[in-house]
Length: 324
Image 1 (cartoon, rainbow, N blue to C red):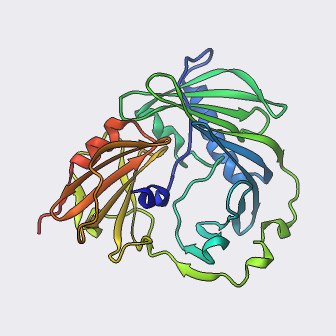
Image 2 (image 1 turned 90 degrees about the vertical axis):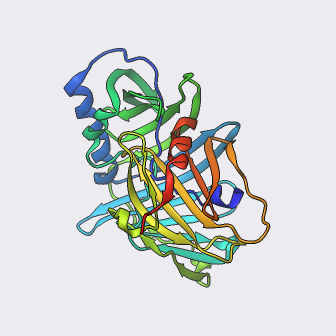
């Protein structure tokens, strides 16, 4: 179970509930679209922290835009050394402790601060979008935008965007009890201006790592691609990606499907039950991730994500083998 949890791809990071203070309607939606665009259209570099539970992780990001599209480097500053290098939708993940470089050719991953979908306005079907007041982050005056869930299948979010550029500088996520689930926040940020392209290159000492290409089926995954189907998805969730993964300690590949409402993602893992390996069953929580597992037709279904328990349970209980 732990290996599956750490393999989970977070396709959408974001934050919190709270009450709106001022502003409504079209202005709030315009701000949401401005935030979505700024993360892809601006040059920026800085350091941010990711807080969840009692843990804090620090990362450094460099984002560069030119006529060929987007390039980005994300470096973990805590724990084991690792880097992500993104060239548009190709992502290289450097893991020196494992002596590997994984390659995702058509990645759909989202990284802070680019956590909103391109069509951010579509979120209004499942979240009430409101403006809050102004707050400050790293010396920048920020506009507060609130996304309050319209049902019990998603958390609330609080976004703080730089007033001058629209770049998201802080994002907090809150559960139904208005408790903080997790939070991203820049502690230092430079927005705009030139960026030396050498800052986007991987650590030169990692050139001898072993390369491995992940067999990712990306883009708009078709339900016909899988032997399994989720018959009762929560409103707004749809399959965005599907792949087969060879997990450490597993002889048989695990089928991995990702469902999203455009803001958050839920992973569904289906793996054959082999031998007498102990299987997890029922609901559990690992940090900020809710998990629900159950056996079905000689397979283990595991559903997990930064979503309420009701979401992972409904999805897991509606997974079935596709009729032949």
